[in-house]
Image (cartoon, rainbow, N blue to C red; front, side, top):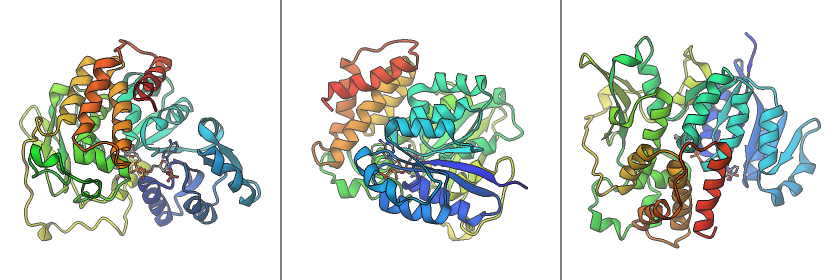
Length: 380
Ligand code: NDP
């Protein structure tokens, strides 16, 4: 069997590194066509030496100059935002693993869709800000959108052999993050270090903070809406602190199907690469008898306001999800820099939603414009 070529957007991130782990394990099935980083050129360089990609992109233009002279002969090197777009447009690959963080992932992912390729999608922000456009483009260009997010991978797997019109609801599980048992009052005093300490998953900083505010589950709810073509009223979020049940589908006859495994992103990444096939691996090894209990709780929407805000913007539609996403990216960044407190994150998002006007039926240019308008509103 010919090896599948994988282009990894964001190879130096948490998902990117896990993807390279999966490829390392299945060297006979996959090879690397492209790798990209923003600033972590030290790790990128190690990855280039090991995986010998044809395309390399460094987003940060200042670092790019010092980097390009040291590349192996024959490597095609590009830089900046345009470099990411050009590389994903020109490179020859079978699978685009989309794992940049934030809005930055949108345009390079669209390039992969326009080539009619398989998109293994970790960058949920792409569907949050432009879900309608993305799903239309996927149909138009006959591309494939396979979720990498563990919850959506679980639902995708549970859907095999089932009919969409027989779904009663999707049940998205959430760990509840590090502050599940804290009161609203206690949230006022949490520190950056506490917020970065996720109980079950090791992830990049942005998604870790999103998990602590539960915005992550809100973004995932919007992602699920577009991936599985179901209204928000048919998507329920429940807290499951052990992160063993990755999500579920309840069908109209009352039957519930779930996908279980110990939390390790390499499993849904591997599935997105190998689908519709499965491959053995050395990392998944889930021992159910060692798990004491699986518990489920209702989320507290009043405490985790970001979750409610995500449901609200999906209902509003138009540019509201893009405004929410941009405001959240800025608020999380400011929290990580110690400029705002944890409870100011939802306040900043509400503020942006109240002040940046919503525009209905936006095209791609309008979404890009509204992302910038929101950033300008915060003067960044
Ligand atoms: P990381 O922050 O760990 O990695 C992000 C990657 O994107 C890095 O390679 C980084 O480069 C690069 N990058 C960062 N900013 C930019 C930019 N502005 N332009 C171009 N490249 C950039 O993120 P994660 O791997 O944790 O998450 C990636 C995506 O996957 C997110 O959308 C997240 O929500 C989603 N996801 C993540 C999960 C996880 O377990 N981590 C689980 C499910 C979904 P550099 O290293 O040089 O900074």
